Image 1 (spheres, rainbow, N blue to C red):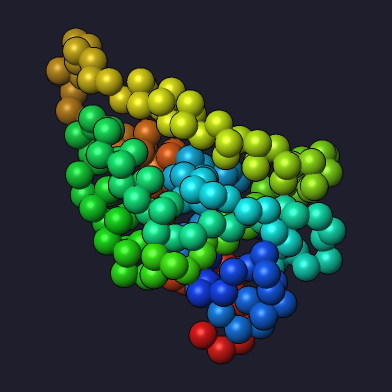
Image 2 (cartoon, rainbow, N blue to C red; image 1 turned 90 degrees about the horizontal axis):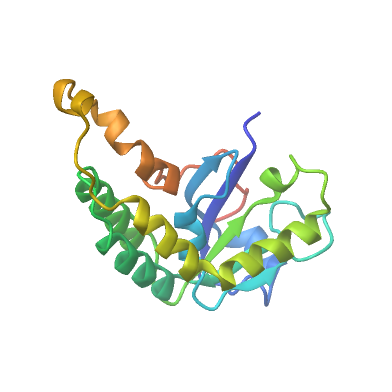
Length: 192
């Protein structure tokens, strides 16, 4: 099994009523294997709130993160607008189009990282606190990532051999772009 990070959306504030969200109103947005990429963390970085996991309901502690969709999408849009990369155009447009068509500005994202936390020996609650602390410093992380995308003069081999589209997009996929779907591996039962 691939340990995944999941991103959901719900019209109900998860920190207020996690049981209601779990049983009624959670829709998939995206998932990533073996990591908690930058893009989903950006999406929950505008006024993030730690909350109980909706997936790991037997786990004590606040290990999931929720934030309103509108401010998170706006922050991601500004970040993507600053990346200078030849493969970004379509990937950025697709991401923003998908997010805006599958969310409402006043709905909430729910970032579920329990499966990724489970790969580590550190207690879930400690990893949840570290995730929240990282969100407080996400602007510095975004600036550091942007420096990696500053255009560089192509090397001799890059001029001789045309890179594949897959290799061009790889640094963007590592950020968490390109994995948008409303059908996730872990779907909660219940009316939508």
